[in-house]
Amino acid sequence: MRFLQIILVGSILYGLFALITSDWSGIIWLLGGASFLFLSNKWMN
Image 1 (cartoon, rainbow, N blue to C red):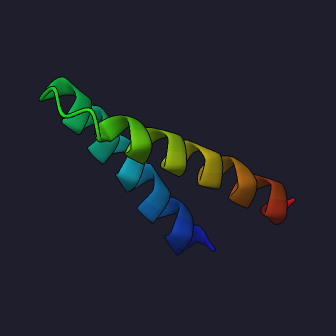
Image 2: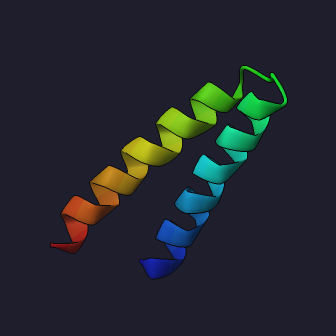
């Protein structure tokens, strides 16, 4: 489960990097990563 969170944090960072380089697909990476990270945190508890 910890491995999954590392991947999700990576996707959020990728999304930020994509937005900085003005690639609007970064928004999808950010939203997807953040929502899955939120869900996985709920499952952990």
